[in-house]
Length: 530
Image (cartoon, rainbow, N blue to C red; front, side):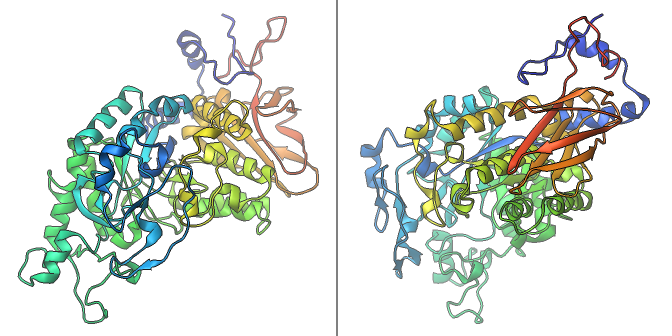
């Protein structure tokens, strides 16, 4: 039987019969790992594309007039074309004025944009906090059991979850379980009444001039007393707890945990265990900015800020390309691939300037994005990044979504759509192994499964000079005289005795695959190789 393998269009898949026929030829080494890769492929938490949204800023509300009364002093409504600006400190409220500026987005307006999210081919939607609170960022929850009315209701959230699931998209909420908001009725009662059961939910101390411990000494963020079993029961330990109730009732698919490192290993491990009891397929991601080793299985994955820093440092000229690769290899070895595949690799988010502000050169931005989509882990894409939105540090990077940039002429959007399509259709990029390649000047690595047809080779040259190197290909199934072709250009390299002579132009990145198609006369050197 002649087996045809599409190579020039990564969105075209091979028929099940053809795959089954070739798979019978699997070798003994791959047979030993077949089940492992099968399990990786079945677990959606390995390598998904996660799209992050600030609900207030994503899409303008259709019902703004009818809900204006919900925004109360010191909260202020802005128009969609206004840019967030740093304000003044409001002493009575204990917050900055820009923290209470609102643009009016809600669950309903987000629901109107689901076709856009589906067209991007994302796997999961991650919402910044949505609970009842004073601020626009809502990291100061008043009551976790309530969705803030400016956004909608828990019923609205359940419908959103259902609609997303119909389109094959998971829903992840932001859990802020280290602290609450100062104006929470729970905390206010705890201050007013020393006999209140809420008193032991917080930590009161004479060490603080305010009389209570707060996160980073921020007045508006009193810390929860997790050493109190009642707090843990309320947050995650009971079936009707906050963590479990949203997993069970609204059918969300996981939690991203704010300042997870403050919760510590033990409580994170307990929370994750209870979440998995409520939904065995749920994901728990910790906001942990440190080295990713040892945090698994306390959490399924972390926000991979460490991996982000290596990419940016290379592109800023602070470390060399080969060192960047070795740092990734070391982190993967130390943390374990199962953990790294579930980490979320981001380049910008609500806590950082946008990528377009961090890296000034278009080639830097392009290389960073391609590396984000090809290194191991989930891709965490901040809303508007796919459009090239700009924005400095807080609050500028939290500007309203620029829907006017969604057009066919937007080159940055074209790049992201191509990356999203490649990611969707390349198994090695979602859950494949990572293999660093020996090089003196380039960042060079492979992503691979047990099939040679999945193998991806990445070559990145962040220098201002062309690099020529002999690259050893750590892929025994690449047949001699095979051709590796770049998914982003017309560049091609011939394989010879397990090497390629790579010529990579300055400030260029290549994503290479092997051509396994039939020759014009029908011959195919890969017809008996899986």
